[in-house]
Amino acid sequence: MSHDRVTANALLDALRGELSAVEQSIRSHHLLEALAAGRVPHDRLRAFAGEQYAIVSSDRRSFAFLAGRFPEPPAGDLFLNLAAGEGQALARLLDFAAWLALDEAALRSHEPNPQAQVYPAFVAWLALNGSRADVALAFLANLAAWGANCGGVARALRERYGAGEADLAFFAFFAEPPPGLEDRMLAVLQSGLDAGDTAIRARRCARLLQSYELLFWDSVAQGIV
Image 1: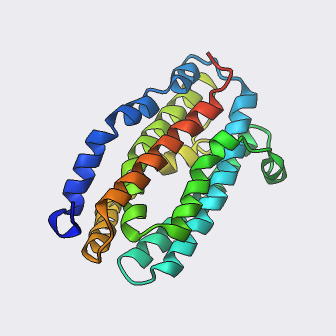
Image 2: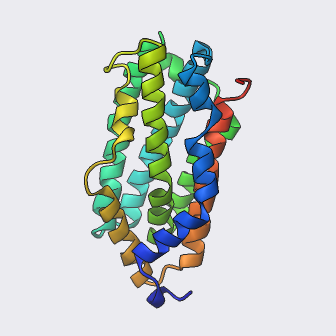
C-alpha cells in the first residue's frame, strides 16, 4: 500500500477492524468485572496507582521529546498538548493515591511489574524511532479502549468502594477525550503519510501498542479471579 493511495481515515477504519479482537479483550477485561463485584483488594489498587505513576511520568517525557523531534504543526502542537495532558493526569493521580493512603514518595518507591511497563517502554521507543504516522495511528487505535476502561474503573470504585469524585479525577480525565483530539491526531497521521511515512509500519506500531495495553491490564489483574 503506497502512501499516496491511503488516507488517514481509511487507514484508521481498516486498523480498527484488524484490532477488534484485542480491543474487545481490553474493554471486557475480567479486572473490570472483578472491580464491579468488589473483588479487587486495595493492595491491587495501590499497585495500579504505582504502575500508572511510572507510566504517566514516562509518557509525559516521551510526548515532550516527540514535540522536539516534530516541532512543526500539526504534530508539534499535538505532542506538546499531550505532554501537558500527562502532567495534568499525574496531578490527578496523586489524589487517587491519597485516597489509597499513598503519597508521592510511596508511588516513586513502587517496584514496577515488567509486564505493565512494556507499554511506556514502547511509547519511549516510538518517541525515539517512530514516524509521525507511527505515533498518531498507534494512539488513535489505543485511546478509545483506555478511556472506556477508565470510565468502567471509575464507576466500580464509586459504587463498590466508596470513592469520591475528587478521588476519581484521574479516571474521569481519560474517560472523555478532549474535543477534537481524534481530528487532530488524524491530521498528524495524514501529514506523515503525505510526507512518505509507511502505512505498513504505522499499522505494526498500532498493533504492538494495543497489545501492550492489554498486557497492562493483565498485569494488574494477576491473582484476581
